[in-house]
Image (cartoon, rainbow, N blue to C red; front, side, top):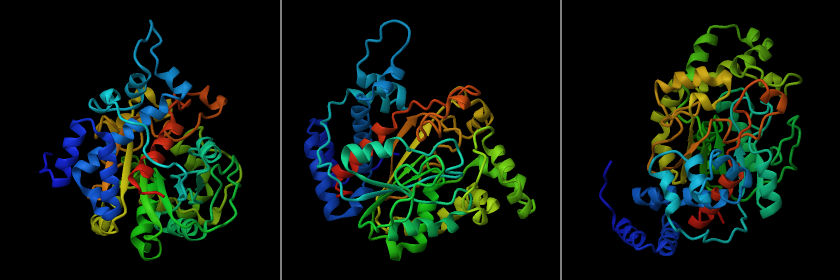
Amino acid sequence: MPYALSPLAKELQHLEQQGDYLAVIRIIKEQLAQNKRTFADPYVKEWIGKRWRNLFIQAATHDKHALKVATKKLGKDKRSAEQKIAERFLKGDAHITEWQLNMPSVQANMQIDDTLVFCPGFINGLLPAHAFSQEFPQLEGEYGWKIFQADLHPVRSCEANEADLLAAILEGKGFEADPGPLSNQFRTANAPDKVFLMGYSKGAPDIFSTLVHHHDKIADKVSCVVTWAGAIGGSYTADNFYELIKNADTDLLTGRLHDFLQLLAPQMTRKGSLRRLEEYDIKGAVHSLTTHARNEFYKQYHQLLDELNIPIINITAATTAFEVPTFQMADCLNLTRYDGNNDMQVTQDQAKIKIPMATHAAMLHGHHWDISYPPFPRAIRMASPNLDHPFPRKAAMIAIYQLLAELGLIS
């Protein structure tokens, strides 16, 4: 939708048209330092998305595996590395042509003091791998960044999980950057100073629920929020599951937990011991992900979220039915009735929060698991295609850090 340019936007537009990207970067950082509401300027939000996509392309060209995946197999692929990455791992006609922009490398000191608290999604720890379990330790080792994962319960409501996220932010409780195959790699609790939050899937509404109910305790500690394929608006798939279980006996559901998990992800969930079993609330967890529950939350709290003046960056994903695991094809096709650019779990609309202090940075080309999880074990990949997860997650994380540092949102 067209909008009237603010005086700041007119200045930035002129500089961008002149190719003076360094000035654009400098001015936006200065303005944000003076007033966080600068983030709400539509032109600034557009720039933030454009800049993240460019930084992502720059970082991903150094990923040999990503380049191999992005290179056409037939004939000699004469495209540049930047073009290959953009056309394979980004979606959107305008976005995938931005590889031609000659933007500078990151303009920021990448010695970061703020701590990243990662908030995993529904049934986290029950799938064959943890999200970013390879990338986070690598980033810690290479850059010295401080990263840990909140111990969010895998199967209970957003409201119940507020206690877990508060423990992470206020006390530093949670997992190491890689929770480990058995989800037992706990960090030594040490309260971080400033944090920025990243919420994947249900982790995103867990974050927002915690912010609106406990902003008096944590708003000053949270510098910004990144949502990563977040189930912010719920999921139509969750709607269907909730209809199946809403009248079922709660004790029966808990007693047949493995059967329930197999319904969600056939052959994917791990058998064996389950942590925090007494806290499982299957109905509450699934209800939290219904579109009705999330829409009611938005109606009640979107103004408060905006007034907290915490910048929010939404990054979404999109795929097709032929690019998802076989057992997820039906769900992907069902979501296509609502949005052809769904990620097999949520639609584009559901993965964004519509408030002035939020912007959409990119639509990635990958399914809901591809953009977050390392390759699943070989035995599982033998049973279904599209579980190798080639998306360059490390490059995406580097670009997130670079963008936030360049904007001055993390120190």
